[in-house]
Amino acid sequence: MDLNDSHKEAAFREEIRSWLEEKLTEHPHFRLNKEFSGTIDDQDWDLRIEWEKLLGKDKWLGMAWPEEYGGRGASIQEVLIFHEEYAKSGAPARANFFGEGLFAPTLLLYGTPEQIKYYLPRIQSCEDIWCQGYSEPNAGSDLANAKTKGKLNAAGQWVLNGQKTWSTLAHKANMCFVVTCTDDQATPKQAGLSFLLVSMTDEKMPGTNSKRVDVRPIEQITGAREFNEIFFTDALAQDVLGEVGQGWEISMATLGFERATAFLD
Image (cartoon, rainbow, N blue to C red; front, top):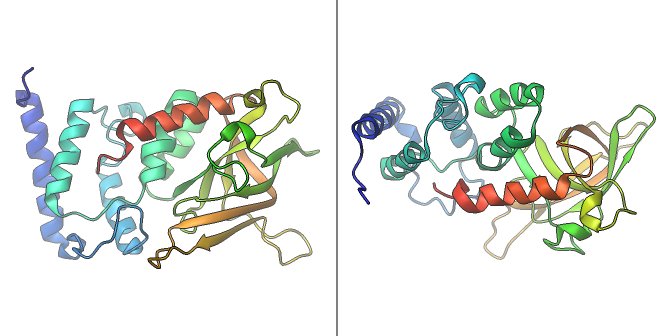
């Protein structure tokens, strides 16, 4: 196997290397903080979001997306080159992990053209920061036993009630993809799951001070607080990805993207 760059790949490597050097020279405050404690910590968050916006503007965020949806149509080899050069550059730890790495490829696989055209630009511009609503206190990562319930109201909206836990950076996110039980009589249980998209900034319930979506940090022994519990109380889903009852299949696809490429940075 020839591991050397092709002429096209070498040109691509030089393009990203030059871009990184130019931006980091132009904006030296983005140089990597050597005391940064981990890729999922919320340290230097505002600075990292500012940097993500630069990446998105020049299509380095979402580079593997099809060109018609705002990406570069980059190959897997080019994605790997990008991550290699990025790791060497001293640029900040990435912040838009759940949006770009997990939700976006899932959206491209299962979303309607209208959903793709709506959500992808919002990820690329960092208008939407996503988190993941999978694990639950009494089910752990056993998604088939998810107890967070979704019921249709009179207006045809899915209303969520339940709790998710270990949701990374939920306190920084404004959107969450939530594995939800929308049919508790389904057999097998997996057939009753749906993949709902929920705004984390949903308003308070009428006549109360209670939030529809309440995020509470889980403080670790190190003092880090990037993990959270999310409590849904009559929270309104903004959208459904795929078909109702297709949540198991879609959530497994998302986990596949996570295990395959999402932790390259």
